Length: 611
DNA sequence: TGCAAAAGGG
Image (cartoon, rainbow, N blue to C red; front, side, top):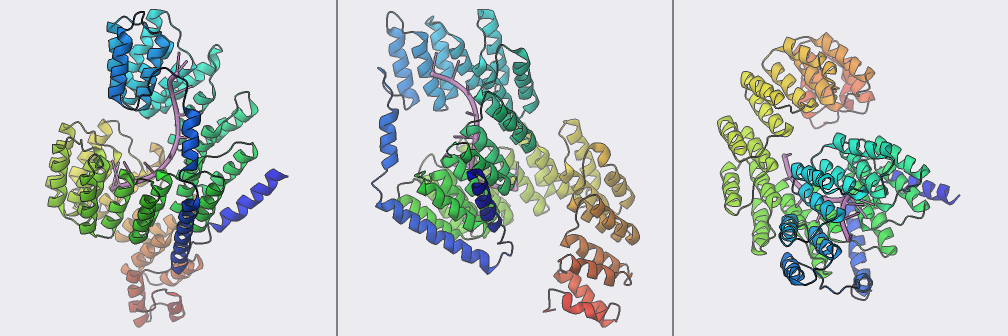
């Protein structure tokens, strides 16, 4: 009964989060409601004794130990040195504890050098030591070394256990190698002597989620619920987060209430995922409800929770309000971090306010270690959007001088900028440079370059680049094909575009709305309007609904081909589906009306009435 | 003593 009640409640509230679809005043109103709420929350927080939860927790978590707590690498090295000088040598367990703590601080290379010192001083090692070592190599993207440590187990006659295998699986996931991780998992299930535990399940479920395979993740969750190894908070939260990322917020909320019915209490991470999910869809009311709910349960929002709010406000253009939230964070001793400031900076960049963006960047620079590759890339992206390539390139040099390594994303941003301003030579030069610096181009890099080449009518270079990409075994996705098909259409090679389009399924790809729109536009451009109309029907049949772009494209296509007879019917169809003509199409239709070519009764149906 | 979950840039 309770389960049903909660489900109903969730359904009711989550459906309300879809009520904002008209993004006008309503949305703004909800935004301010939300801000009022955040302000109230701070007032509530203010009335509480200062950080009540935190202080109790530190007391509770203080473990009994004779070694000082390690908070930095230097401490670790000192304690380690002292331990190495003790006679008799402390047990391997005590060394493991230090290694584990340093690993928790994410100083993976430090762990490896400490491990090497153990070797020199002839401290033995056990399964746990080697598992920590594997984990460190995994996080350093050195799977090869991880696997050679595994070899060491066998040489020393040690038997890897669940943790070892789970660590290895996680290592594969860090390299996006879900298949290999699943291989280990399946072997464990089949093997019998080393059964997966809840962490192993959580790891492979995360792998499925990474690949966007929520179904497989949920299937495994159901298996766990039936079996002996019950899912815990992490397992549920992993799937909830993945559903939120895929904007399946309703499913996420359902799983969330299901989890609570099983007596598993959510934490700040679960709530942050959900708030992020609903914010992405503009569900301010729902975000407020969740925020309210978590605070009422004494689960306090942290920097990440607030960063979600700051980022969302920035993305909808409400940077002023976002700044307000940051102000409140500071007031409440929640220290804004690099992510907070980078989001704000991005918000200003999106509005083209580069002066303000630069000011925040200056603030971050003055705070020392706050600036990272992402913050540089964000500012670079801002300059690229404004076509200020010199400023963008200056930042690239500046970051390199500071020892920050520009990554693929940084280069992609700059390549996009050069393509936008039509400087394809500079783009190509930078493309070679990034590879010389060891940054591997990804599918998006190729998409950016191909798009730039096609739009600048350099089709043969584009095709050459596409072949290069295939040679690198990068899997071309539908985006790449959309660019190529559009490029062929621009070059008036409609026949080749058709061939590529109809060959998509044989490459295991499904055309999306954009693909259809591109192809329909190309066919109209080539005067093949009846074929375009056939495609319009076909896309619907194949479960890919046309959007307002589709109709605008095809209507314009018919008008431009002087085939005005079919236009009236198409406009009717468009209006019936709730779409409207854009400014360009409307102009053409009004022009036709002047020539008595379409039914004047359709005029009031056009949305842009000012024309 | 070791292994899994949250937020930012194209």
